[in-house]
Image (cartoon, rainbow, N blue to C red; front, side, top):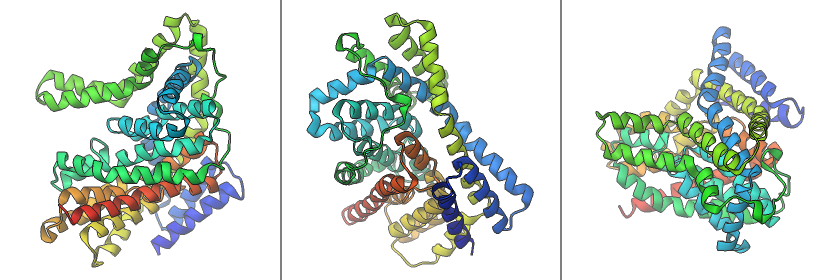
Length: 437
């Protein structure tokens, strides 16, 4: 019964947004209230869950989204994005531009949390699309597939890191096997799948679209890359530093602090303001205007993501994920397939990849010793399942929809299918690896 209520709630959300054309944030709130009542939650607990969910997701994302938008707007307005796109075009040519974006997304995605990577890479996708006259969805899917795979499969991302600990797996072997499984998943979900997406010719969100600048007015490639990728460099540096420095050292604490997303993005924005604006004699008023425009651009996206957080929290607090897990626990399946299946179903119902992964870990961890399955592969199978079919209850779905200016229907046909390919390919790769290792 709880599962049927969740399915009905998701269908109602789709109807309200697409057919009734109701404001997405309002739709989330209405569906969350009705679902809570249908699940027989206490009315005060329903509103508390909604408030907690909005606060929880925005508490961790709002700084990243706003600062990422500011940095992205600076990169676009200053011509840095145009410079990077031009150099990429010259290096790989129009024929292989997707592969260059995919590789960039994979490299950036390893140290960079998914949400930060998304808001930082989207401006680059839009700039390349403007230069090549290719559809933004066609160019964006390969890069975002890379970011998604690193988010679900590879430490130091939250869910894989926690899974390594709970399954008593090896961080190094998980990374090694993760790379092996990630490559075919990214290729199939990226360049191969996106071949069928060339007809999506929607205009992207206007937040990062600017008129091309004359070549002699563009910043240098080194400055452009350093400004755009400073968050990546800071996160990579602090991650390496924490591996080399003893935890008791004051320098470990400093490295840990510098690696916090809030500090990383603040430093990146300040650096971008100087290198791409003030240093190039851009008036302070214009730099501040770019900052203000960036905040206005993402206001709607912030509300939509907040609404998805409310629904996710309500699903979690109503114990729907526990109900699904207990129902599936008694099924006699291969441990890798069972871990993937439980994570996939929780992901589809709850929306959060991290919640799906960690909930599954608590269920299947006791099976590892008794079944003798490789714990490193269990991490990958669970991670792959946690990426299954992102849809209307996932904040990433709405970020993609709003940034790429798609309808809900087209977002399902593109983003949701891409995530499904990533998930299924990851399962297949893990099962094949289990026959060797």
